[in-house]
Length: 273
Length: 254
Image (cartoon, rainbow over all chains, first blue to last red; front, side, top):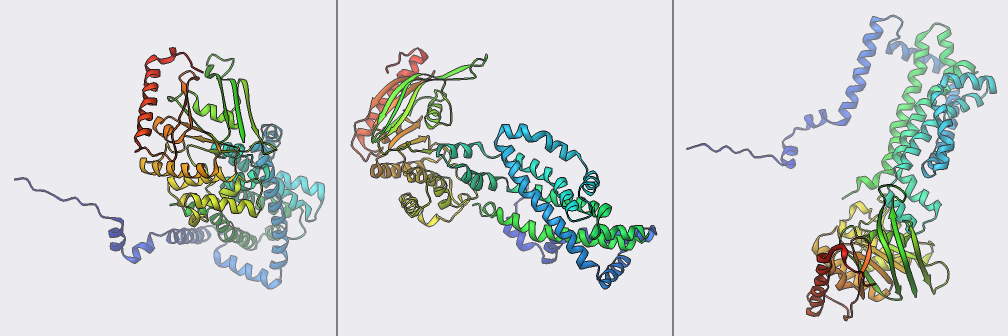
């Protein structure tokens, strides 16, 4: 007589109940993020121990504290933040407007396509040289550099998103003669939220390059200016301290502001039955 | 009262190319007043294309089409699609308001009234993704009625639903229509559904021509279980079987 073997699959509730708390914590998203940070930190320690010209975490913190003590941090950081914020905000507003036009109208697409491609192909360093020549050593150069480097990325993402808006919903709107303004507000913009978020993320990363380079070459203050100051003084710890400060700020901005805004915009998806 | 006039209407896709295909061929009919007209026919006979042309989503190749309203101003249309076509990121109530001309107290009240008619008052603040397919289609129906259209177009609105949900919605549609008495053009491939709902059935044959224009003179409300409804359904089905047997050679009646 053959022997019967039972091969019963466990339910999700059973799996949930039989998994220990420490195992759940170890396999969570939070644990993965902490592991990534720790890995980076260990790598930084190793690289700085092997290569003398790479400042280690301790040296960077010491230089940062010194900069705070000199009263250099808040003023310079605020200057850069102001320039970066205005540039990225302008790039977002103009980028969404032009992107929506390009997505909705074939004529707009034909008009803007070439300038946007040219904008995408010009690196931030070229814009920073040009704007310093055009506008000198004030706020305008880094703001315009940030705007010009960031805006093509917002435009291209938003235009792509608008072109992907459901044909069925557009037809429904046409059938009911929904006014254009309401279509943009209630149909197009919510549909392209993900694309706008991606565009703004790119704008922030690229814009950060732009503002830093512009201050590096033509600034009289700001993060880029202070970074160059320490670079010229052959003090890499001071240079790295400013980089860490601004990168940390961008990461926090992305995680606690942009990420939360995106989650709020997509709450309709999380509530699906 | 709305008057829809369709005269010598033709539609050819890919005009001027080797892939040109005529889907509607000299269609003529008129729909007046508080009438419920169904357009039936086999798949691919041009039913949905005809509805899209009437709604303005699709252009016609030749012929005449007009919609007149005695209320003054441009005639208003409502459309219930095969799928609900709701904005997934807006609540049920905001979807109702999205298609309204004005956003004053009257239109809000009207939207609430029609939501109440389809039994979804409690779900006004829900997102469409939180509703079942049948509930979403009820929102689509309420939305179409809430714009107080001169002409209401419906394109196989129950075809994606299970039989029991579809039967419930058909009954609900009859109730709402008997209260609002709108001019309705309803596309379906289901003859049983057409007989239950309509005052008149226009039968399209393959090739996009009108095969027959049948008047349904039965008292309302109608239920499928009613013997007179069932008899007429069988009769209309037999006529369609005959059309199918004759195929494309059938002489158009209208």
